[in-house]
Image (tube, rainbow, N blue to C red; front, side, top):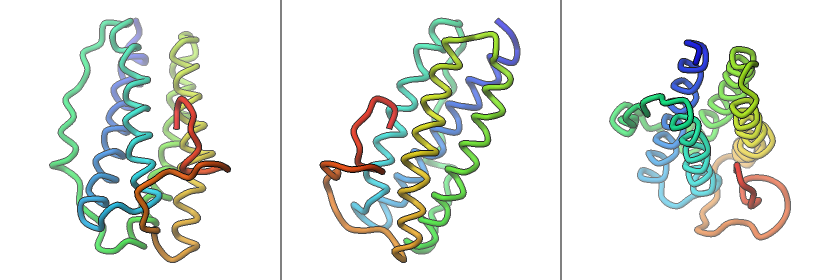
Length: 155
C-alpha cells in the first residue's frame, strides 16, 4: 500500500465527515429543510462506501469529531452558498485523489462514483437552493426526477 492511497482515503472520509456534520448543523439550526435533509443522508452513504476500502487496505478509520468543529452558517441562504462551495471543493478534491490513486482500480471506482454524486446531484441541488433564495421545508424525498432526491447507491 502506498502513502498516496493512505492519504487519499483519509482525506476523502474526512471530507465526507465534514460535509455530513455541516449539513447536520444546518438541519439542527433551521429544521428539516431540503436539500440538506436529503444530502446529509447521502453523505452517510458516501462514508459507508469508503469503509470497505479502509478494511481491505488495513487503514485505521479516523474518528469523526467534525460535529464539534463546524460553524453553522448564519442564514439558510448562507448555508446554500456554503453547500455550493463545499460541493465544488469536493469535486476538485476527488480529481486530485483520483490522480494519486491510479494504481488502485477499486479505489478509483468508488471515488469516481462519489465525485459523480457530488457533481451531478449535490451541487445542482445547492445551486437551486441559492437560485430559490433558500432551502425548502420538507421531510420527504422527491419521488422522481433528477437532483437531490434521486435514489441511487452513491447519492
